[in-house]
Length: 126
Image 1 (cartoon, rainbow, N blue to C red):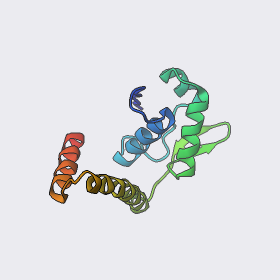
Image 2 (cartoon, rainbow, N blue to C red):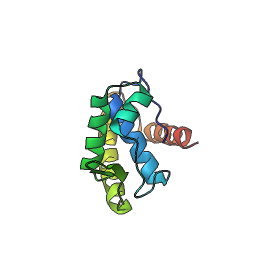
Image 3 (cartoon, helix red, strand yellow):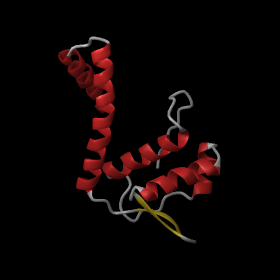
Image 4 (cartoon, rainbow, N blue to C red):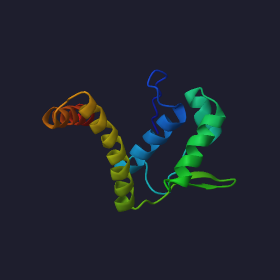
């Protein structure tokens, strides 16, 4: 499992961990039933506090991506891709709502905003 942290991104470290694990689960890099590193091992590998990894794992469990078994560890949970996609669509809509507000305030046209989104998408997907 590869996790790359950025101290300059402005995104809390636990959220960076969550998003990268979610991404690896959804892409199939992490499969159902796969054992994740323990919170302690992950914290040591990333050189961060165990409290941070605990928060990330708790949030992942709450969101249905992993399942923790006392004494055995945390495992990738089988996910319903339709539910995950619906949740992502809702989160995207919230973010786009804020972007549209900024575009209106800045007098950025719909075509310009659409082009910005398209370019960002292509850059990230590549």
